[in-house]
Length: 456
Image 1 (cartoon, one colour):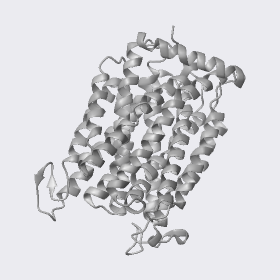
Image 2 (cartoon, helix red, strand yellow):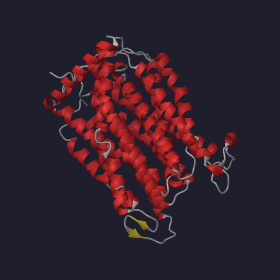
Image 3 (cartoon, one colour):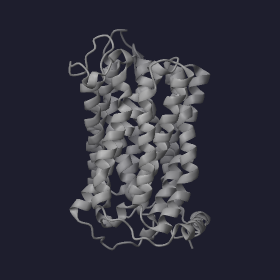
Image 4 (tube, helix red, strand yellow):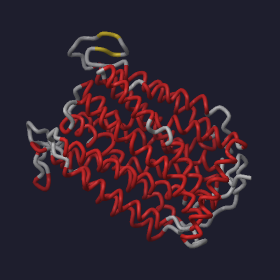
């Protein structure tokens, strides 16, 4: 019988002090700038606008890189997770992949604002390397979660950790917008200041510095996790772990069809998280190409989304017990479907497919409104997904494998959103049409969620 089950039975209260829990939560604070600065609001739009030949090609190239990274993660995640379970401790794995993440982030500084093959390749390879590092570090950090608190507090822990992460992304975004990234014409940042450290606005060095800032931020704030959060005890040597871990993984995969709730959750999350990642990854690229927004406007976009996401993450933890984790996930998906439909219905001179004056501010206002909904729903969805997975797992010591499978479910089809966006963008030559595949992925995820059972 598979070690991952539909009927969770781990009700024991783990013993972890507040310092250990807060140190674990700081991982989300440490890692979030990669998602906020690199994937969504600063570097990806910079790449599309200044490194790629044009925004449409930039969206397609970024989607291709996301596809490659997603496939690599999907292939390796369950294997590495199973090996981690067999050996025991998670921190060595987190450290190793943290090094990878830092190297990839640092390399982005060297992608100059010139559409040469070298700059394009450097930006995309650096992004993929950083993506792999951060994703795998997160897998093992997530696997530590059930050892910190009991099930009745998992929703709150996950929600508060996501909220803290979004706060970290918000602070890092304000730092970049207020002190580093400047308008090339005025030479001033969002706060009206000259960029710090002599960063050159003409060379877009403030935007490029998002990579090194992400790396430095992560190095500083991940330290408490290594120092104060307890790790699992060592179970076996590496040689035995390879054999044991792979054997357990094969056993679990074979047993998945007999565990309908777990299988349904993995399938559902496979699609809805892919869609959410697509919205996050291409939101900044979308508005810079379709709406013609500046870096400053995208920064406001990001600040608003982050603030609302903090509230959404905290509310998800509150409603986890009151209405049930599954309902939180379902409501969030419905709101994200509505948001995605709203985005494709807006363009300069058009709001919800209705023509307005060419100089009307309504399209921009509508985008900001949709960003608020997207932030709240996205934060709630991510916060609620972790405890819903824990509900499907029978043995806490197999959490690495479980979150490896969770990563697989999030990455096995992770190429669909970027590939669909790439394909639709290439065929249509339109960024508005190119973004539409995420809507279908959200709908599929919602339908597949129906058989999933939750403990709350």
